[in-house]
Length: 129
Ligand SMILES: [Zn+2]
Image 1 (cartoon, rainbow, N blue to C red):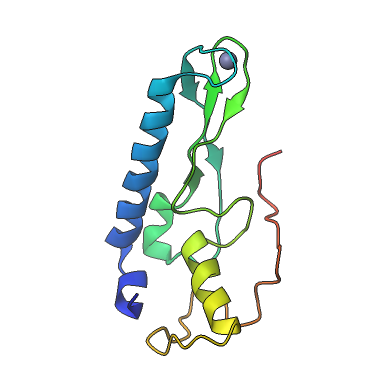
Image 2 (tube, rainbow, N blue to C red; image 1 turned 90 degrees about the horizontal axis):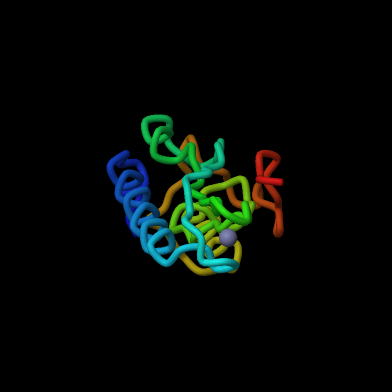
């Protein structure tokens, strides 16, 4: 994956649309607990590793809540990895760097963490409770 792609705000728009598709599929199936209708219950997020121009596409973790049993359903995401504070793509690329795999085409960029700045298993401070 090229460095230029990570600096392109429209790339993050594409990732958000993929998340919206995943969410739509889950919503159409209904609640996995009772079969009730699912409504929007997104989480606000402030992920690190996101270029400033792409923040509008990275500031919400799409989630759903059942209208009947009130249990939450959070679809899979291509932008977020669990409750980590960094965007999923940044965690994956930085993990490859620390494992010794060469990603020379990915230089240190101002808005992304440097190698070693993402502790393993780091949990976000703005994660849902
Ligand atoms: Zn339900």
